[in-house]
Length: 398
Image (tube, rainbow, N blue to C red; front, side, top):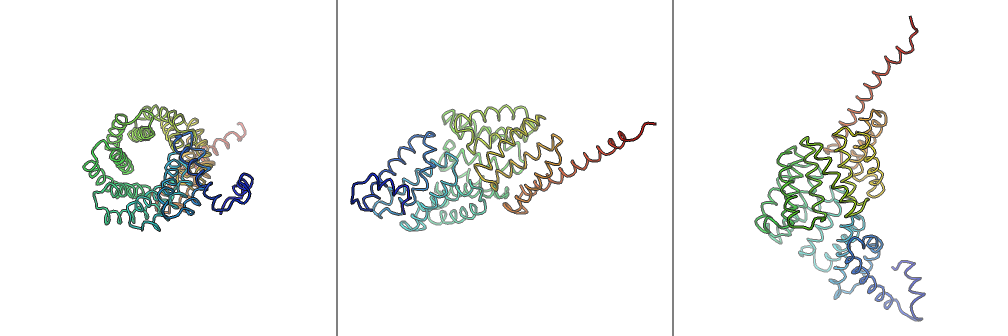
């Protein structure tokens, strides 16, 4: 089906008597050319990529089997651009469409189909759909090991993605074990400087940090940043992500002033290199706000957390795990400012949503429950402190 607006445009611009097949051919040619121009434009093409995404599944559906590969590549190319733009919903739409088409045309076990399944799992993870992502990555890894072999780069990428998803689910030890095994294999198969190897080392460091092994995590993050800076251009997003991870590791070690300075520099670069409302920029802003709280700059932290929460609700949606993290962090900042009743209400809402979205046993849910208890205690202490003061002030002078 064509969009009604497209029908109208074709009706106004096509010669009389033009048939539907000719119209579709002209439209698909134009779409393909526009996608090529968009994906070649870098960051300047991101807004157009958003607009194009809903129209591309029909292009693939109309494609005859002989031209399937060309049209599939058009969708894949735009999906990659949407991934870079942080537009997970549009990316997910195209990844699912490509996977369905490849399963039909190539079969479920074809290497390209397995790669597309992995890409879909990554898009689901970016959307915060962690359980679906983990299940899909587990299935994909099993098939990759069976059809490609345990040391194939596609298998290693699949294992890395599964470990990432397990870490999101709070299965940090499993994730760390998988990441360690994957890193060892990447270093052997692709070499120590390959970007997949460096990404694997970064991911292992993140899992170690989640386990509280902060010294090891900091060393790995710092090594990875040094290597990224050596092999990539200075403003590459991988460098910014790596620098952000170093800052988080420094904060975990109690090196708060260093963390603040590095987070501030990273946020400035994210806003310049990507854009102020890119999801990675919002993560960087969240990290700076948390670092500011550690050096008692609570008013600044609360303002940044409020801004980040507002943007995440708009861009990611109210139920995305990153949005819940922002709400949790804002509640903590409000509590530090003595705004205990607001903090309690926000913590209660966040806990309810964590239990619904991630489950009652997820580590983030347990942290949220603990934060609510702390906020309730702080509110109670504040009330006890105020009551005697009020009675004393209202007592008659003697």
